[in-house]
Amino acid sequence: MATADLLLHPVRLRIVEAFLGDRALTTSALAAELADVPAASLYRHVARLVDAGVLAVVAERRVRGALERTYVLRLTAAAIGLDEVAAMSADDHRQAFMAFVAGLLGDFDRYLARGDIDLLRDGVSYRLAGLWLDDAEYAELLRELTRVLQPRLANPPRPGRKRRILGSVLLPGSEAGSGRRDGAAPPPDEAAPPSGEAQLPFGEAASHLDDEAVPGPGGDAAHSDSPSPDPQRRKS
Picture 1 (cartoon, helix red, strand yellow):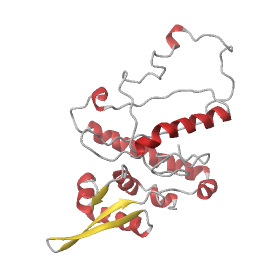
Picture 2 (cartoon, rainbow, N blue to C red):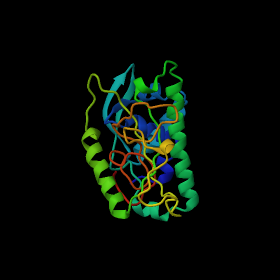
Picture 3 (cartoon, rainbow, N blue to C red):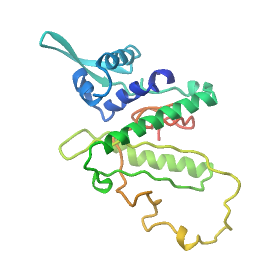
């Protein structure tokens, strides 16, 4: 298991994310994807991840006299154990969550920087929803999400497929009561959209499933797949 300090460094988090989707990347290919990271810094962080067993070398070849290595992500190693999650302080969790959110902001900035963007065409969405669930219903929700996502996490690359990033955050809401009488219908302007999903801030962009997302406390990169500290589960 990797430590939170190792995985939740902004650059190392981006390196790990680059390998999600069962990718094998050379150092030059990785440098091309993380072009804003200085080469010396990138190689240093790759070496840290290799030393920790998070990245593994699967091939080597000589390119103009230099040795070029190909790496893959070791999913079982790219996780923060439940014991470490339990030992994290509130400030540790705050710093971890800030790293997670900063990674998403960086991904979104890079998407916007492409110029010709169309959220609907590109399958980009971000949304919030409030759910009233008891513990058993919440556990069932996680099981259902796993059943939906697990087969798709195993999808190999092929023509026509795009690599997509799915991030998840699950937080407890207010427990001060629903503020609405049981059985009372919501006002017309609060009615759920026909799809049953929450409205997007900027219209209804296509919802998407992801190959995988980034590792985080309490979950494997391949299966929970988002670095949201969630000690209630190993996978979601």
